[in-house]
Image (cartoon, rainbow, N blue to C red; front, side, top):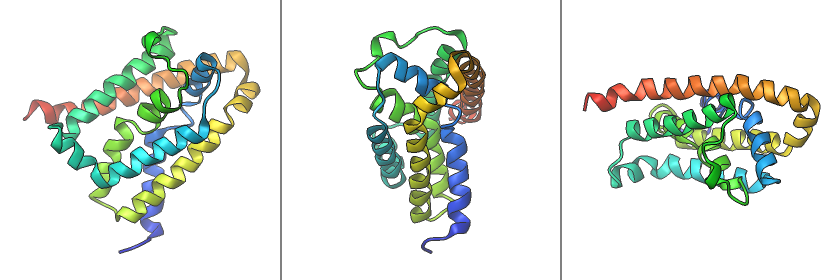
Length: 192
């Protein structure tokens, strides 16, 4: 019971892999080019609030509105799939949805605190103490904030062609993540 680094470390690594902020760099750069400025602080705080709130009330909220975790994960996988298609094919699916600021949508949700990370948080609850999951979330949000703040520097370092190449590569990776999320959750829906 209580703070345990043997729980914090694996929970942090699992969330880091699922949030995949490094893999999202091309999308972050693309969003910044579309909206002009990304509010790193706002995106990080909103993501942290969503994820930490989900630790405590996520399953209850889904139950109240009649959605099971599997349906939530499948819906999230479809959103990720659409975002990945934009990256790989160079098309724009969400052209009317580009807000004045990308801090909340699509950055904080669903890119950072999306179905994958929220579903993972529910899975972590069954294995780890709540305090350790919250610490793992805070560590990840710190990393997210650092990457968001550095996106301009990262763009300058890798250049326009580098961004295009990395965007395509990570688009395919995001497609694979969305397919895996879909495939691992759809059998539970079909067997209900």
